[in-house]
Image 1 (tube, rainbow, N blue to C red):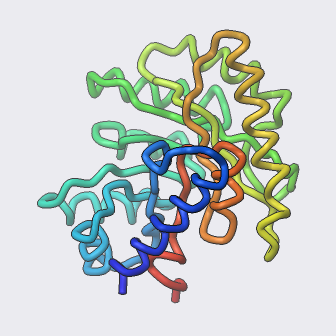
Image 2 (cartoon, rainbow, N blue to C red):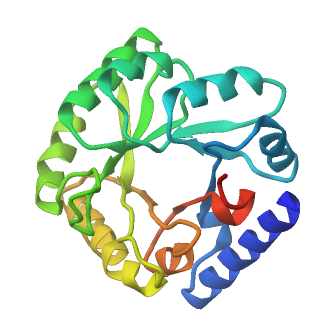
Length: 225
């Protein structure tokens, strides 16, 4: 079942790319594995998954320790507290939701201790919903400029979430806003190739609007229980 779901997602990604004149190889699939058991995750990895996204530090650490025999890139996609950075700094592939300079400074500090650079994305609240984390588009300019000054982080791009809605089209404006923001920042010579946006219900819209990473959980692993 997991393998079939993955193939279905890849087919939908390819179709969305074809409609928007893009290449499927330009899209990185992040499988959101929060609350998913180790056996199902292993099944997914053996069926072609490589990038896994987790929302909670303790769960991420447990899974990282349990899966050492298969290739996997771990992404932290939840809201990260500064006092939890030290637990993942040695091995995390990317942190998707950096929304403050304070957090960036902490990530850079522990990355330096680990002798590496950590890839991060700046989270932008493009839907302007009060329940969501992330900086505003206006605040993002100053935050990105400040984060680029930090020695041991690599700002790969931007991340956002569409508004809560059952209609995927409702996310289009949020995704378009993120791409427009990225383009404006690149004019200032900040290279930000990654746009992490789109989930199970709206990733095709995200691809049409420029996503390079999509974060998909339910459509791969099924509904959480």
